[in-house]
Image (cartoon, rainbow, N blue to C red):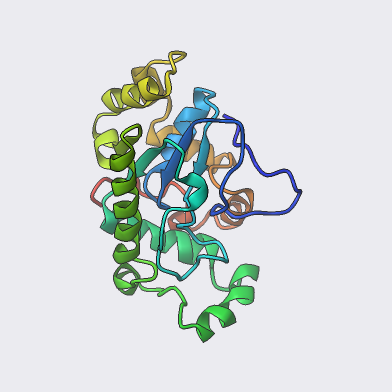
Length: 237
């Protein structure tokens, strides 16, 4: 799979809106199962744009409520992936505090004071994080609700639920492949090739499952399993 990036040579975070010739777009809030789907569609070599639509942890949006669907994406048909918001919030806590803003990291030093002055520091405890309107369930539900209403009104989009996909991947993947008009691989084959065990082994072997900078951070902290992109992979965990 080729993720098309802006070619200005500068670093960009995962909140940036992607710009490529691909007509295929996958949108999800962070930690909604996207790593797994991206790994799978990468095996099928399907050219897909993947983004969090300004709902993640970039400097422009961290610690802010999700306001609206970006205007640049209004005209796009999308595949929307969502997951139980409590599970999402718990995983998002680990993503935020262990991968993106771990204490002592360069980003933690550079962003701690601005976030503290605006009272937008991410809570370290899981309970406080899940209940935070700026990071937890409330923000995740706002993101999912806006996108679900948007795709329902369009009528030409596909909605995937992570729990359903995980429960029966061999049935879920055909829906995705049919929607994209892809016949190079079957849903059953894709499900078998993208098992959690194989993704976890790929990450431990150094394969980049997220942004390169985030993956390097994890490679320096392999002794902390909670820092992994593929952490527990437990439905309703």
